[in-house]
Amino acid sequence: MENTVEKALEYVKKVFENDYSGHDFFHILRVYKMATNIAIKEKADLKIVQLAALLHDVDDIKLSPETHTNKDKARNFLTINNVSETNIETICQIIDEISYRGNDSVVPKTLEGKCVQDADRLDAIGAIGIARAFAYGGNHNRVIYDPDITPNLNMGSEEYIKGKSTTINHFYEKLFKLKDLMNTDIAKIIAQQRENYMKDYINEFMNEWDGIR
Image 1 (cartoon, rainbow, N blue to C red):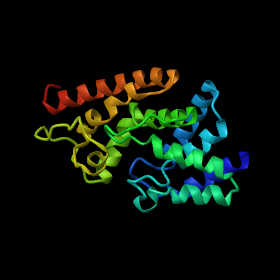
Image 2 (spheres, rainbow, N blue to C red; image 1 turned 30 degrees about the vertical axis):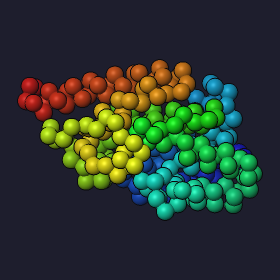
Image 3 (cartoon, helix red, strand yellow; image 1 turned 45 degrees about the vertical axis):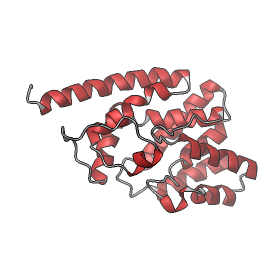
């Protein structure tokens, strides 16, 4: 599947070349690299991890709702590139399990899925995570912050996907929860560092918002 990984890199670069929501090709590339590093440490099936990481957003419900249920884009790419049906099902299961869905989020059944989920969630936090949160918020007409809108900390899948909030609330509704949802030891260590950075940022944001400094 070595050549298929290279083709997947080319494929997702084209798919996401005009994305400005924080789900661009460079997000995919970072997840791919992080998932690869985690998979090597965890002794997971590297090619399964790499293909799932590269294809994890092509059928994302926020980006491609019409193909989300059956993972049509991922399946078509893998089929065209002669990936076995068993591996296609494994990869599509990973893609289906890794997304954050509020209280309805799941832990992937396979080690490979856990590696990809950790990599995707790590890219949602830290300095990059902050930048992506505001990029996504602006792309979806979210206000940066409104003190009259309180975070909803107890959302199920549908409410999380369809609900309207502020970008600052998103830190409390999702990003600050991710550290405790990591699966692998290396991801837990990285997540702690990135969460600390985000908390410092939010503290500074609130101080500036309130005119303290």
